[in-house]
Image (cartoon, rainbow, N blue to C red; front, side):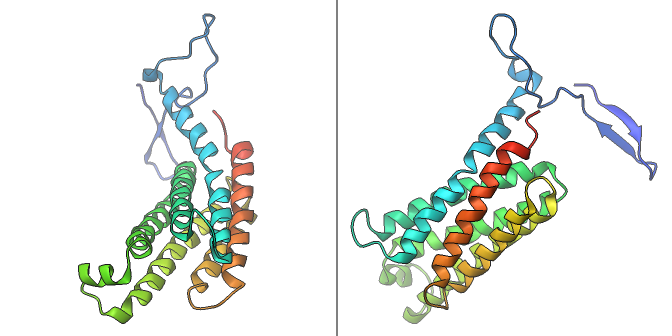
Amino acid sequence: MSISHRQTASGRPLRVAPAWVGAASPAESDGHLLPVRDAIWIWSVRRYARLALWALPASAVLYGWLTLGVQGPPGPLVVGLLAGWLAVIAVIALAGLLAGSRTRRCALAGLLVTLAGGTMLVPLAGLPEDAVVASAPLAAGHVTDLFAAAVIISATGLLLLGWAVFRSKLVNPADGVLLMLAALAMGAGTTTAQPVPTVGALLLLAAGMGLAWTGGRLVPRS
């Protein structure tokens, strides 16, 4: 692939890729698209990332159901794990869409912090307290504190992603504000009672719906 060099205002060379890289090329006369060597896969990844953003409002619905109390099957553990799985898909897709924006570093940091908090939450939510104490150098009374720390870490990652959305100028900045408010409410939900966790779920639902809708309309498709 050829790369052309131009000078920026500071005198440094600017690498400009060909215009067709990542573009959605029209179908040929026989109905076949361009091969992978023409970088059509970049457009496909962006398309799937936009579709994966719909996992965020779905995760918010399950999280809101969890905050209200799951009485019957499938139970709170299954609902919580499913909500976390959908949230991971959504934050990876969001960070992928922001990879070409000016806030890509903040988005990457938010993704890594969110994944770190989610990794801590999975064993704490799925294992009994005695098993966690036996497998980690923790006292019996500190498991709850560790769970609260994992929630705060995850909320911090969402806060960074919300700031990246707000500053990216790629999607609606109001969705970034809603995502940051949802992160604050979810982080405070470990120390406060209802309705703060449910409010955080509603804010996350609003942010997710906005990102999924505007992400498909405002993010360039070519």
